[in-house]
View 1 (tube, rainbow, N blue to C red):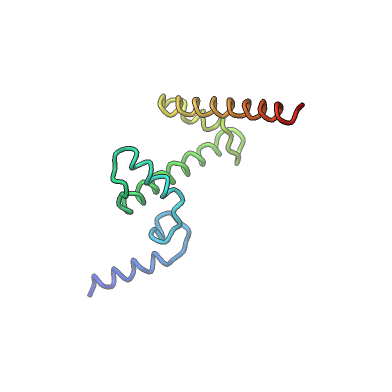
View 2: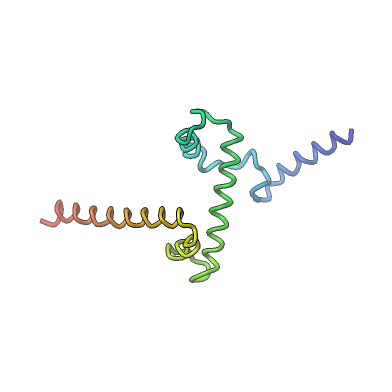
Length: 124
């Protein structure tokens, strides 16, 4: 009987709707499920990984993004996240820093290519 009371209390916590990450875990909208499934498959997992595995990985990703965003908001301009703030936070992690540097460089190259393309088509 005591076990039954504990289980119903758990269900009530899930229906609480307090907006926390842990509360309503099963009913929260999954933002990155499709992408994470593809990434997991690309890194050697099954083509259809367990939903629980994807959910745990998504929780970790959301937690990481949330922490990095909070840290970025606390440095630099208060309450605002800028690219420089993210670069500053990851500067001591060589792998992340190199990846961000590559992505930022590629973004600049794409901007220049689009601008040159638009000028060639519409500038004449």
